[in-house]
Image (tube, rainbow, N blue to C red; front, side, top):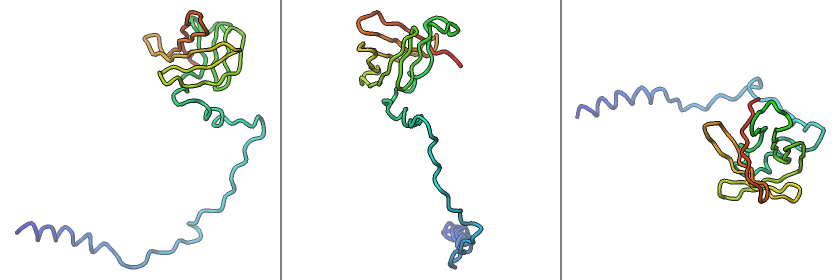
Length: 143
């Protein structure tokens, strides 16, 4: 019985704070100004968002600069972007596809590439198998 009067004492101040009058109208100073949409920059026509939109889900960690031994040796770098693959001074256009097993596939100059993201003590890496050749492992180069 004692809880009912106590609960009423708690609820009464809340109800007293409620007002049934209409809310105030917004003044002209508080309304946002009309804006025009920003124009896309002239250039290639491809935006970074449009380029990465073509990537399969989970392929973003594959993008970047990689090296098997030394990141300071510019001739030994492997560079993977959303649309190109470059290694050993040669480059080609690619389109990554998800193999649904944790690996990704691409074709480069009629050669099939299988890219497997790996994470180990040496850091983040990719195991790259080109055709029937022995897979090579490369590790991310920091900026």
